[in-house]
Length: 144
Image 1 (cartoon, rainbow, N blue to C red):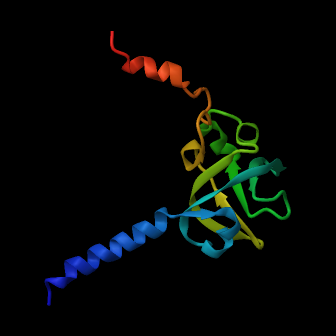
Image 2 (image 1 turned 135 degrees about the vertical axis):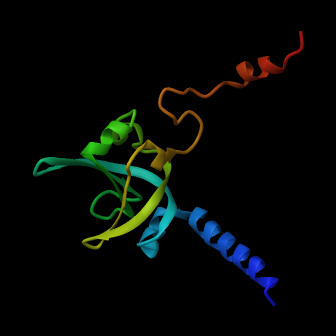
Image 3 (image 1 turned 180 degrees about the vertical axis):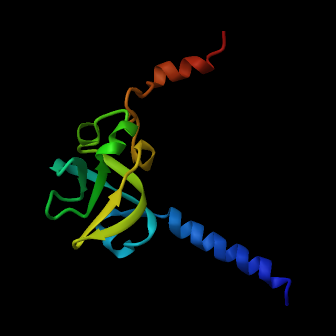
């Protein structure tokens, strides 16, 4: 009977990892509050809020504020970990973000600590990196 325990533990771990790595559309984000997930969606709005001695950059997915599916929050002290201005570079792009979802006054939010938490999807979406055209790429495989 003890021979089955490793298999059960393995399956349980695989199930947990598969759930954590699944990509969830931003419209379903509120269903996963409290969990660490990967959410996908389009950035449709952004706002920089100054409150007290702190500033926050907030990116909205799905719909503009106040009907957003998910608010992505970047604290002022974390802006230095983004090599670009998120409110400009990510606007109107599809993104995937990984982190823990929280409920803040009835709104679903995810705190982003650095640029590694959010990925723009599609070719050429990384700052400073241009997509390679097919002609340039094929030259690497030509025989002399």
